[in-house]
Image: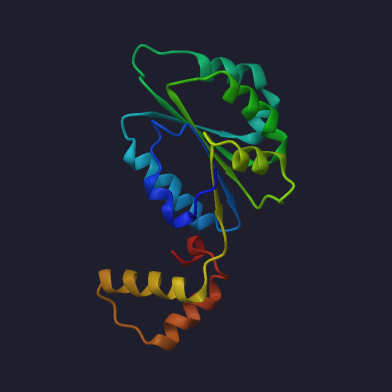
Length: 173
């Protein structure tokens, strides 16, 4: 199921266990992942790179599937994902794991991507594309930040700052 990037506040990790964030806007993806983590402070968080999972497949399976007496639920964040991890994710989704949520952070995925189409076509999975921010959205973000910090700056300087960030709010921040 596809969700727009501005609707990610509605995602509930207790109901939606598999979430794919993909696209070129690394800053927006990082913001959304951190807000999901903050909403679920009681859960244990584990971060993996795709390369770690591909190299140590069995160890990661054991770590994911092992139950701890102290940890009720886990959030597993997989960074730098690509189509290479498709088999791993599809196998996990078939196992019906109830107390673990997976957030997959991928760069831009093509329309033909196995991982992207798997998330888009399966109703239980969530897929969120992140495109470059527009100049107007970056301008609004900048103006809100400056108002919060009580900094007066000319619109010309704001435009200069926005042009330097190349459409990525991570660079802007």
